[in-house]
Amino acid sequence: MGGGEMNLQAVSIDGLSVSFAGRKILDGVSLNAEQGELTVIVGPSGSGKTTLLRAINRLNECFQGSATEGKVGLSLATGETDAYSPGMDLGDLRRRAAMVFQNPNPLPMSIERNFGVPLRSVLRLNKEQQRERMERALKEVELWADVKDRLQENALKLSGGQQQRLCLARALAMDPEILLLDEPTANLDFLATEGIEKLLVSLKQRYTLLAVSHDLDQAWRVADRVVVLSGGKTVLTLDREQMGEHAAFRERVKEVF
Amino acid sequence: MPRALKVFGWFAAALVTCAVLLLVAFLVLRGGRALSPELIFGDTPWLDAVSGQKPVFDGLWPAIVGTLALVGLSAVIALPLGILSGVWLSEFGRGRVGRLVSTSVDLLAGIPSIVMGLFGFGLILALRRSFAPDANTGLILSAGCIALLVLPYLIRTTEVSLEGLPETLRLLGPSLGMSSWKSTWHILLPAASRGILSGAILAVGRAAEDTAVILLTGAVASGGIPRHLTDHFEALPYKIYYLSANHRNASELDLAFGAALMLLCLTGSLFLLAAWLQRSLEKRWAAER
Image (cartoon, rainbow over all chains, first blue to last red; front, side):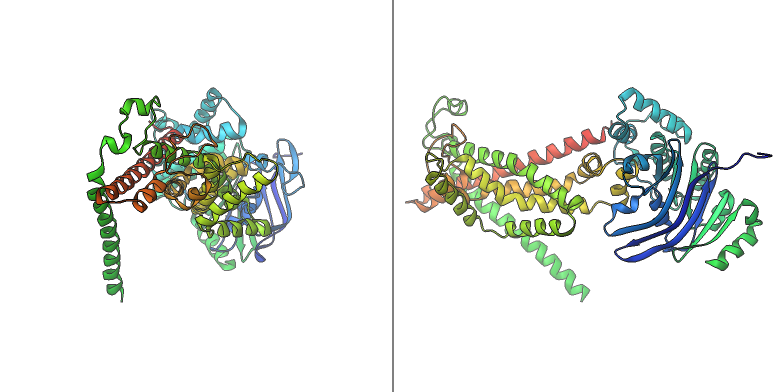
């Protein structure tokens, strides 16, 4: 291999269709997300962005009447795997492909317990290991300094931006390989948004990031690759080079919306 | 139209409040007259009665103990069954089986308590004729029938309060790799505990006040404190019925009102206990300082 390193495809989706109670939400979507990159899925509301993200960690199956077809290939530390292969350990899959939601959803309990509950029940870590993981994750999202003296306080007392960082840290504490972010800044003010954006860019070295956004400007600022979803189909994929200038990018994406 | 609605809304709320206040005031006025240590313990010194050294003949004490035992036993049977059924219906009960269970719960809710009592009575008759000729009505039979009676309240409130939780909370557990049962146990149930508590309060109240079931399954007018699970027992609602049905003068009727006031106080303190229990569980769950 010559110049650069070959980029590995961490997520490769092919011919993915998802329907709920017979209503088709995604119709033959194909998408590749590479390791060390931040892939941003944009599209009008109702285009199926969230459903696409939830198809990767199979969270759609938490709802009644969901049906999924197609292939979701994941390249994990344990090897290549299809998320929908029979006998897939759902708990393990969802831990490795962690998700952060649009609305910050800390549990209404102390900051420490927010980590303790999943770390103990899923990974069976003891108190000391839980603390280590929590500290590492909170440092990763640059929240440790703010909360290290108030770990016993209710997580809901934190600001919106801090809550979202906490949720991100809680996902990271589970030691994931892929991060699925469902409009993580949709309900934050511009300052908190800026902070989270910076954080995401710094995290992509360690994790494969897939984010959904309704904000084209945000996509242009942070994405290495933009996938445009419309009417349940992928209508355009652009890498950083193809994205070009800000204005041109906006025009190009709007055309296919 | 919205204005009329507002007026009627106020009127309805005021009417309900007045009705409750009137009822309680009436009960306190008439029952208060009869309320005294003698009403509860008769001629027996209270310390001897409470410690069980001497039986109480002319007081409500055995009925209070009987009702508490009945409520406690039926709660022990109904709470786990009801909450678990509610969880199952809300989180796992899908398709035909789910609908079948749901319909059964509706049917159960529609069964009058006298029918439940008759069922318990019939059960004892059948047992006597078959493999347990010594079977008799008693505390445990009553508790079982009462538990069956209050199950629908527990099941429905658990189901509804779980289903009312926001989607972000429901998806959180699975998104972190928790199994459905783990997510339900560690996240959803504690978050829904307030709603479940309201169901438990309804159930406890219903268990404490029901007369029809115990009438046919083991309550007696005077039998002392039950010594074991199959003993006959006294209970406040039955005592109220007995005292008022057999009264010969106004002061004897006042005894019934006194017993009713005792029942009200008893259920009131059980509600407080339930609320305190729920709050301390919630605090432990949140682990905040």
